Image (spheres, rainbow, N blue to C red):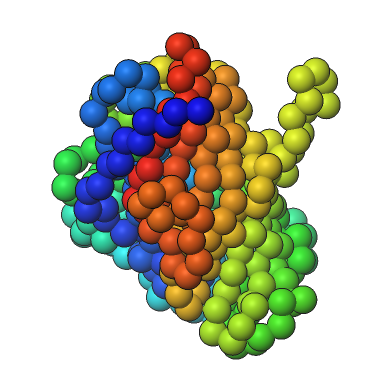
Length: 322
Protein backbone atom coordinates (compact mmCIF):
# COMPACT_ATOMS: atom_id res chain seq x y z
CA UNK A 1 0.00 0.00 0.00
CA UNK A 2 1.45 3.35 -1.04
CA UNK A 3 1.59 6.04 1.61
CA UNK A 4 1.96 9.72 0.87
CA UNK A 5 3.63 11.27 3.89
CA UNK A 6 2.79 14.87 4.52
CA UNK A 7 4.87 16.18 7.43
CA UNK A 8 3.85 19.38 9.10
CA UNK A 9 6.44 21.04 11.34
CA UNK A 10 5.76 24.27 13.19
CA UNK A 11 6.59 25.63 16.60
CA UNK A 12 3.79 24.90 19.03
CA UNK A 13 2.87 26.55 22.29
CA UNK A 14 3.23 24.10 25.15
CA UNK A 15 0.05 23.36 27.05
CA UNK A 16 -0.57 21.47 30.22
CA UNK A 17 1.35 21.06 33.42
CA UNK A 18 0.83 18.59 36.25
CA UNK A 19 -2.63 17.72 37.48
CA UNK A 20 -3.21 19.51 40.80
CA UNK A 21 0.56 20.12 40.90
CA UNK A 22 1.35 23.03 38.59
CA UNK A 23 -1.11 25.64 37.44
CA UNK A 24 -0.35 26.43 33.82
CA UNK A 25 2.15 24.31 31.91
CA UNK A 26 0.11 22.15 29.58
CA UNK A 27 0.00 19.90 26.55
CA UNK A 28 0.54 21.54 23.14
CA UNK A 29 -1.86 22.13 20.27
CA UNK A 30 -1.75 20.33 16.94
CA UNK A 31 -0.76 22.52 14.00
CA UNK A 32 -3.09 23.94 11.35
CA UNK A 33 -2.58 22.50 7.86
CA UNK A 34 -2.73 23.58 4.21
CA UNK A 35 -5.54 21.89 2.27
CA UNK A 36 -4.16 19.06 0.14
CA UNK A 37 -6.66 16.50 -1.15
CA UNK A 38 -8.88 15.69 1.89
CA UNK A 39 -6.00 16.17 4.35
CA UNK A 40 -7.23 19.56 5.57
CA UNK A 41 -10.68 18.35 6.63
CA UNK A 42 -9.35 15.15 8.17
CA UNK A 43 -6.58 16.95 10.04
CA UNK A 44 -9.06 19.59 11.21
CA UNK A 45 -11.22 16.86 12.72
CA UNK A 46 -8.28 15.29 14.56
CA UNK A 47 -6.83 18.65 15.61
CA UNK A 48 -10.16 19.96 16.94
CA UNK A 49 -10.56 16.89 19.13
CA UNK A 50 -7.06 17.39 20.55
CA UNK A 51 -7.65 21.09 21.18
CA UNK A 52 -10.97 20.54 22.92
CA UNK A 53 -9.58 17.78 25.12
CA UNK A 54 -6.38 19.70 25.92
CA UNK A 55 -8.15 22.89 26.87
CA UNK A 56 -10.86 21.18 28.91
CA UNK A 57 -8.23 19.14 30.74
CA UNK A 58 -6.27 22.30 31.49
CA UNK A 59 -9.40 23.91 32.88
CA UNK A 60 -10.12 20.83 35.01
CA UNK A 61 -6.55 20.96 36.33
CA UNK A 62 -7.15 24.58 37.32
CA UNK A 63 -10.41 23.66 39.02
CA UNK A 64 -8.81 20.83 40.96
CA UNK A 65 -6.08 23.19 42.10
CA UNK A 66 -8.68 25.73 43.20
CA UNK A 67 -10.56 23.03 45.12
CA UNK A 68 -7.73 23.07 47.61
CA UNK A 69 -9.09 26.44 48.74
CA UNK A 70 -12.13 24.78 50.28
CA UNK A 71 -11.40 24.00 53.91
CA UNK A 72 -12.75 20.47 53.66
CA UNK A 73 -10.14 19.46 51.09
CA UNK A 74 -6.42 18.86 51.50
CA UNK A 75 -4.68 22.25 51.77
CA UNK A 76 -4.08 25.18 49.41
CA UNK A 77 -2.29 24.80 46.08
CA UNK A 78 -1.04 27.63 43.83
CA UNK A 79 -3.66 29.62 41.94
CA UNK A 80 -4.05 28.83 38.24
CA UNK A 81 -2.21 31.08 35.80
CA UNK A 82 -4.18 34.20 34.90
CA UNK A 83 -7.00 33.35 37.31
CA UNK A 84 -8.33 34.64 40.59
CA UNK A 85 -10.80 33.12 43.01
CA UNK A 86 -13.70 35.52 42.70
CA UNK A 87 -15.77 33.80 45.37
CA UNK A 88 -15.32 30.92 47.75
CA UNK A 89 -17.85 29.52 50.16
CA UNK A 90 -16.43 26.79 52.37
CA UNK A 91 -19.83 26.21 53.93
CA UNK A 92 -21.43 25.21 50.62
CA UNK A 93 -18.34 24.00 48.74
CA UNK A 94 -18.68 26.57 45.96
CA UNK A 95 -15.80 28.35 44.22
CA UNK A 96 -15.83 30.75 41.26
CA UNK A 97 -12.68 31.10 39.14
CA UNK A 98 -12.38 34.24 37.02
CA UNK A 99 -9.85 34.50 34.17
CA UNK A 100 -8.52 38.00 33.51
CA UNK A 101 -8.37 37.89 29.70
CA UNK A 102 -4.92 39.54 29.65
CA UNK A 103 -2.34 37.25 31.27
CA UNK A 104 -0.33 35.17 28.80
CA UNK A 105 0.05 31.59 30.03
CA UNK A 106 2.31 29.52 27.79
CA UNK A 107 1.20 31.42 24.71
CA UNK A 108 -2.51 31.48 25.64
CA UNK A 109 -4.89 34.06 27.05
CA UNK A 110 -8.01 32.91 28.89
CA UNK A 111 -11.17 34.78 29.81
CA UNK A 112 -14.57 33.96 31.28
CA UNK A 113 -15.26 32.01 34.45
CA UNK A 114 -15.77 28.52 35.86
CA UNK A 115 -18.04 27.75 38.79
CA UNK A 116 -16.93 24.79 40.90
CA UNK A 117 -19.36 22.93 43.13
CA UNK A 118 -18.46 20.18 45.60
CA UNK A 119 -21.20 17.87 46.87
CA UNK A 120 -23.30 19.57 49.55
CA UNK A 121 -26.21 17.96 51.36
CA UNK A 122 -27.60 21.19 52.81
CA UNK A 123 -25.50 21.11 55.95
CA UNK A 124 -22.15 19.55 55.07
CA UNK A 125 -19.63 19.62 52.22
CA UNK A 126 -17.98 16.39 51.08
CA UNK A 127 -14.22 16.88 50.61
CA UNK A 128 -12.69 16.19 47.20
CA UNK A 129 -10.33 13.57 48.65
CA UNK A 130 -13.34 11.45 49.72
CA UNK A 131 -14.07 8.30 47.72
CA UNK A 132 -16.98 8.80 45.29
CA UNK A 133 -17.04 12.57 45.82
CA UNK A 134 -18.46 14.26 42.72
CA UNK A 135 -17.57 17.80 41.69
CA UNK A 136 -19.29 19.83 38.97
CA UNK A 137 -17.53 22.47 36.87
CA UNK A 138 -19.77 24.92 34.99
CA UNK A 139 -18.06 26.80 32.14
CA UNK A 140 -19.33 30.33 31.50
CA UNK A 141 -17.98 31.74 28.20
CA UNK A 142 -14.59 30.24 29.06
CA UNK A 143 -12.49 31.35 26.07
CA UNK A 144 -8.94 30.30 25.22
CA UNK A 145 -7.11 32.38 22.61
CA UNK A 146 -3.76 31.38 21.16
CA UNK A 147 -1.54 34.47 21.09
CA UNK A 148 0.48 33.53 18.00
CA UNK A 149 -2.49 33.55 15.60
CA UNK A 150 -5.49 34.68 17.71
CA UNK A 151 -7.30 31.39 17.10
CA UNK A 152 -9.72 30.61 19.88
CA UNK A 153 -12.29 28.22 21.27
CA UNK A 154 -15.07 29.10 23.71
CA UNK A 155 -16.67 26.63 26.13
CA UNK A 156 -20.08 26.67 27.79
CA UNK A 157 -21.57 23.75 29.70
CA UNK A 158 -20.60 21.35 32.45
CA UNK A 159 -18.03 18.75 33.43
CA UNK A 160 -18.47 16.36 36.32
CA UNK A 161 -15.69 14.29 37.89
CA UNK A 162 -16.21 11.43 40.31
CA UNK A 163 -13.23 10.63 42.54
CA UNK A 164 -13.87 6.91 42.24
CA UNK A 165 -10.98 5.78 44.44
CA UNK A 166 -10.62 8.67 46.85
CA UNK A 167 -7.32 10.40 47.56
CA UNK A 168 -5.65 13.15 45.55
CA UNK A 169 -3.27 12.85 42.61
CA UNK A 170 -0.57 15.06 44.15
CA UNK A 171 -0.04 12.51 46.96
CA UNK A 172 1.34 10.04 44.41
CA UNK A 173 4.46 12.07 43.67
CA UNK A 174 6.09 10.96 46.93
CA UNK A 175 5.58 7.21 46.40
CA UNK A 176 6.91 4.54 44.06
CA UNK A 177 4.17 1.94 43.96
CA UNK A 178 2.15 1.37 40.76
CA UNK A 179 -0.53 -0.42 42.77
CA UNK A 180 -1.45 2.85 44.51
CA UNK A 181 -4.00 4.47 42.22
CA UNK A 182 -6.28 7.47 42.04
CA UNK A 183 -9.18 6.90 39.65
CA UNK A 184 -11.34 9.66 38.18
CA UNK A 185 -14.45 9.26 36.03
CA UNK A 186 -15.26 12.25 33.84
CA UNK A 187 -18.45 13.24 32.02
CA UNK A 188 -19.04 16.41 30.01
CA UNK A 189 -21.82 18.09 28.08
CA UNK A 190 -20.47 21.17 26.34
CA UNK A 191 -21.29 23.74 23.67
CA UNK A 192 -18.23 24.93 21.73
CA UNK A 193 -17.59 27.88 19.44
CA UNK A 194 -14.50 28.17 17.24
CA UNK A 195 -12.76 31.33 16.05
CA UNK A 196 -13.92 30.95 12.42
CA UNK A 197 -17.47 31.92 13.47
CA UNK A 198 -18.60 28.32 13.17
CA UNK A 199 -21.99 27.92 14.80
CA UNK A 200 -21.82 26.40 18.26
CA UNK A 201 -21.20 22.67 18.14
CA UNK A 202 -22.00 20.05 20.75
CA UNK A 203 -19.40 17.85 22.42
CA UNK A 204 -19.71 15.19 25.08
CA UNK A 205 -17.26 12.90 26.78
CA UNK A 206 -17.14 9.97 29.15
CA UNK A 207 -13.62 8.97 30.18
CA UNK A 208 -11.84 7.19 32.99
CA UNK A 209 -8.35 8.22 34.13
CA UNK A 210 -6.17 6.01 36.31
CA UNK A 211 -3.21 7.73 37.98
CA UNK A 212 -0.24 5.93 39.55
CA UNK A 213 3.46 6.39 40.20
CA UNK A 214 5.65 3.82 38.42
CA UNK A 215 8.82 5.42 39.88
CA UNK A 216 9.51 8.01 42.57
CA UNK A 217 8.79 11.53 41.35
CA UNK A 218 6.75 10.44 38.30
CA UNK A 219 2.96 10.37 37.99
CA UNK A 220 1.49 8.52 35.06
CA UNK A 221 -2.09 8.45 33.81
CA UNK A 222 -3.81 5.87 31.62
CA UNK A 223 -7.01 7.12 29.97
CA UNK A 224 -9.75 5.09 28.28
CA UNK A 225 -13.27 5.65 27.04
CA UNK A 226 -15.80 4.82 29.72
CA UNK A 227 -18.93 4.25 27.64
CA UNK A 228 -20.17 1.87 24.94
CA UNK A 229 -22.94 1.36 22.39
CA UNK A 230 -24.36 -2.15 22.47
CA UNK A 231 -26.64 -1.89 19.44
CA UNK A 232 -25.28 -2.58 15.97
CA UNK A 233 -22.68 -1.49 15.14
CA UNK A 234 -21.31 -2.11 18.61
CA UNK A 235 -18.77 0.46 19.86
CA UNK A 236 -16.53 -0.16 22.85
CA UNK A 237 -14.38 2.31 24.79
CA UNK A 238 -16.42 5.26 23.54
CA UNK A 239 -14.80 8.42 24.93
CA UNK A 240 -16.17 11.39 22.95
CA UNK A 241 -19.06 12.26 20.66
CA UNK A 242 -20.87 15.24 19.20
CA UNK A 243 -21.03 17.40 16.08
CA UNK A 244 -17.89 18.92 14.58
CA UNK A 245 -17.52 22.23 12.72
CA UNK A 246 -18.13 20.45 9.40
CA UNK A 247 -21.58 19.43 10.66
CA UNK A 248 -20.60 15.75 10.96
CA UNK A 249 -21.86 13.65 13.85
CA UNK A 250 -18.76 11.94 15.18
CA UNK A 251 -17.80 9.37 17.79
CA UNK A 252 -14.30 8.71 19.16
CA UNK A 253 -13.10 5.48 20.74
CA UNK A 254 -9.88 4.55 22.53
CA UNK A 255 -9.01 0.98 21.49
CA UNK A 256 -5.61 1.39 23.17
CA UNK A 257 -5.31 3.45 26.40
CA UNK A 258 -3.72 6.91 26.12
CA UNK A 259 -0.73 6.86 28.49
CA UNK A 260 1.20 9.97 29.53
CA UNK A 261 2.98 11.60 32.47
CA UNK A 262 1.49 14.48 34.45
CA UNK A 263 4.41 14.91 36.82
CA UNK A 264 8.15 14.39 36.51
CA UNK A 265 8.99 14.22 32.79
CA UNK A 266 7.58 14.37 29.23
CA UNK A 267 4.58 16.17 30.66
CA UNK A 268 1.29 15.51 28.84
CA UNK A 269 2.95 14.09 25.72
CA UNK A 270 1.20 10.75 25.18
CA UNK A 271 3.72 7.93 25.22
CA UNK A 272 1.33 5.52 23.53
CA UNK A 273 -2.31 4.88 22.72
CA UNK A 274 -4.84 5.16 19.90
CA UNK A 275 -8.05 7.00 19.12
CA UNK A 276 -10.41 6.17 16.27
CA UNK A 277 -12.65 8.92 14.83
CA UNK A 278 -15.93 7.52 13.49
CA UNK A 279 -18.53 9.44 11.47
CA UNK A 280 -16.09 11.91 9.89
CA UNK A 281 -15.48 12.05 6.13
CA UNK A 282 -13.24 8.98 6.35
CA UNK A 283 -12.53 7.01 9.53
CA UNK A 284 -9.33 8.31 11.16
CA UNK A 285 -6.95 6.35 13.39
CA UNK A 286 -4.74 8.57 15.55
CA UNK A 287 -1.64 6.93 17.04
CA UNK A 288 0.37 8.63 19.78
CA UNK A 289 4.05 8.40 20.72
CA UNK A 290 5.82 8.43 17.35
CA UNK A 291 8.82 10.20 15.83
CA UNK A 292 8.89 12.57 12.84
CA UNK A 293 8.78 9.56 10.50
CA UNK A 294 5.75 8.02 12.18
CA UNK A 295 7.66 5.25 13.94
CA UNK A 296 6.97 4.29 17.56
CA UNK A 297 9.62 5.72 19.86
CA UNK A 298 10.76 5.28 23.44
CA UNK A 299 11.57 8.09 25.82
CA UNK A 300 9.80 11.42 25.30
CA UNK A 301 7.86 11.19 22.02
CA UNK A 302 7.76 14.11 19.58
CA UNK A 303 4.72 13.51 17.36
CA UNK A 304 1.37 11.84 16.75
CA UNK A 305 0.11 10.52 13.44
CA UNK A 306 -3.25 10.06 11.74
CA UNK A 307 -4.10 7.45 9.10
CA UNK A 308 -7.15 7.13 6.84
CA UNK A 309 -8.15 5.96 3.38
CA UNK A 310 -9.59 8.63 1.08
CA UNK A 311 -12.51 8.38 -1.35
CA UNK A 312 -10.19 7.13 -4.09
CA UNK A 313 -9.00 4.26 -1.90
CA UNK A 314 -5.57 5.83 -1.35
CA UNK A 315 -3.99 5.44 2.09
CA UNK A 316 -3.19 8.82 3.67
CA UNK A 317 -0.90 9.78 6.53
CA UNK A 318 -0.13 12.98 8.41
CA UNK A 319 2.42 13.40 11.19
CA UNK A 320 1.93 16.26 13.66
CA UNK A 321 4.31 17.43 16.41
CA UNK A 322 3.04 17.72 19.98
